[in-house]
Length: 160
Image (cartoon, rainbow, N blue to C red; front, side, top):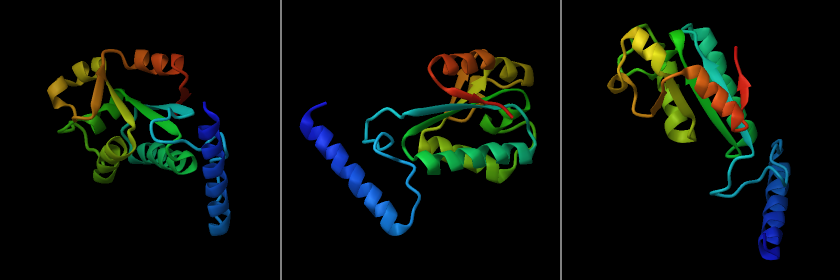
């Protein structure tokens, strides 16, 4: 990195830190946390989403919200849905899905770039086709393989 870019980064980091202090805001983004558009995030986390009860799903989505607040654009989140959790990724769920959770999942995908992966094996078992899934859902034949590969790419893994 050139000296100009290093100096710019340090200046902006100091400015951001001063602004946070002036506002009384906790600054989780120290010099090594501050990113620029196009920078790859420092943090990567993948969640397992395999239950259909509202409390479980709300806990995961709330945790995702907290992480996005804590790390801003310096985190990439992914969610692998299988078993009873698959229904949040269906256009027309075959099990009841809380309306707020259904909307939040879309919001995370559309507004924060959260990757949602649907397990193809679960889809087949339930009777979903690729066309039944929401447009932002990525489909992998084996959800467990997607979890493994995210970990191999450096993602931390969270299961409830």
